[in-house]
Image (cartoon, rainbow, N blue to C red; front, top):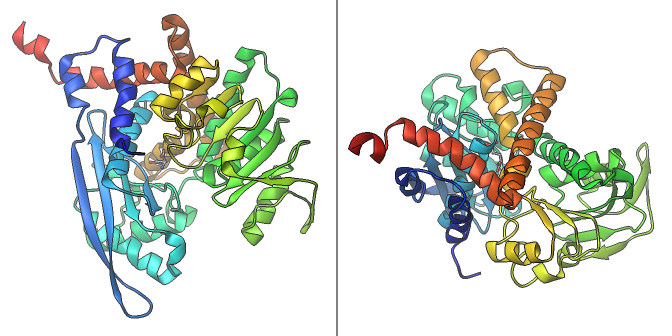
Length: 427
Ligand code: GLU
């Protein structure tokens, strides 16, 4: 891909601007990130050598509140990618009406190449480098691709050491024992599931006749696959970064998850207790998974998976974007022409940041909620905002993606206008 991801991401904003009247000030404001930081992180490796890693944190817009967003560890992390992800977070928080702006962070690294000691030193070094840029009232971090509660715990601890006080609300997705929230680990997948359950009845689709393929078996993909399987959907294919598995009669996802957790291997198994037996299946590539003849496709891995070059081969009827940016703007047009319904990332994967907000609220109030309280509130938010976006899409005859941007822009635009715009000063 030669075009910048950010240029690509901005095209979605341009599409939405055609359906909304919003002040010129707001449009101008949203073209640029508020601030971008690039840092070099020195890490002493286990063999005694010194390596310098590149890290980033971008705060895109804070008009609606402190900025919020995860930290990604991946070899493809770049300033362009982090900026795009921060842009999406701005719209995601507005879609969910949570009082945050958008940010994102990342380190260009394949974490699987580091020992646990090196990973800890890198994570603490990243916080040393960005400590002046973040804070519970300024910019709040969280997990993203290939980061997890343990890493969040190291990061919070490092921030506490720097501040000489305990500041749990600077980072969400922490271990429970350090102020994390119940339900945060499953929140992204569960939010996706609630949105699917709210939307599918509109197409007279019932779970038992619905086949599903999920690309990505991480925090989002594995949870949504399991919830769909338990709700009676036939999940026929799942994949991880190494490839996928397909079983025509459906996979027993709880067993697949149990097996993957204990062996790191993605295999079609059926487990009774700790005994897992391989069932009939075939292996498929990620590319094949995206082209399966299924009802629902859930891309839950990385951005730019469905592009101009493979969109034509997609046969699913409904696509739910559990990943950030899995479909390019050019692919969107191809899918729309084929009559495929696409439900956008800034709504579909917003469960993660929503429960991150709940975690921040709990940290600041000091009162902790039960898992049912967390999940009930998450469900209520997901269903409410899904219905609102659905109504906008119907009213204006626009895609769910454009409707989600319109919905978010109404909220962001109102906040920008509240500080005064050209009409206020000049008229
Ligand atoms: N990394 C997640 C996302 O892309 C969660 C962000 C957060 O919890 O702040 O939405």
